[in-house]
Each structure stands twice: as C-alpha cells, then as structure tokens.
Length: 125
Image 1 (spheres, rainbow, N blue to C red):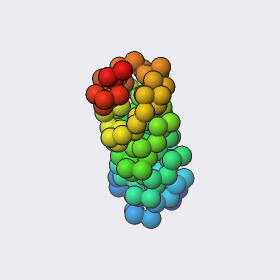
Image 2: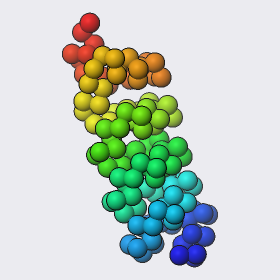
Image 3: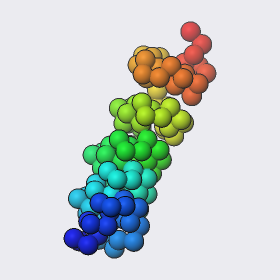
C-alpha cells in the first residue's frame, strides 16, 4: 500500500497499475484523483459511485465526471461543481437532470451556456 500511495502521490495515473484491492481503497484512490482527476477511471466501481471520491476527482479535473456512476451523473450539485470548472461537462449530465425550469434557472445562474444543453420544452416560456 505504501509503495502505491507514493506512486499515486507523484502521478495519479499510477492507479492504473495498482491491484484491484488498492483500486478499491478509498485512501489510495483519493490520493490519486487529487493529483489526476481522470485517474478515477481506474478506481473500483464502488468508489466511482462514492460522492466524496468523485467530488475530489472533479475538483481536480471537471472531466473526471465522465467516469462517475450514472447515479452521480444525476447529482445536480456535483454536475454544477464540474460545470463551474468546465461548461462542456454539462453535456455529460444525465438526461432530465434539469427537469424543471427552476432547476435550469439555478444552473444557468452559474453558467448561462447551460441553456444550450437544456431540453427545448424547458426553454419555451
């Protein structure tokens, strides 16, 4: 574990070469994603569904959101955090994420361009 921790602290992508057991170790994975958010793709499935782990990855690289579980792609707060870093990640959000005009307006207050990814029926009024 110590060897892998040292490796991911230097280069988060080293998680790719860790054992399955260490890819499922939240401490190791958080260290990796704090250095390289995209290394989330090497994490165990359960950790790609752990909000704190995904949030750490997204804080480092907004596009790490693409490696999150489908459940977390429906998390408005997490998607908004990613969208603050890069608007293009709004395209990764699960359809229906902004199901009401109020939700869409809240997201658009952060980034008006979110409106470009909104369902047309929410833009009709």
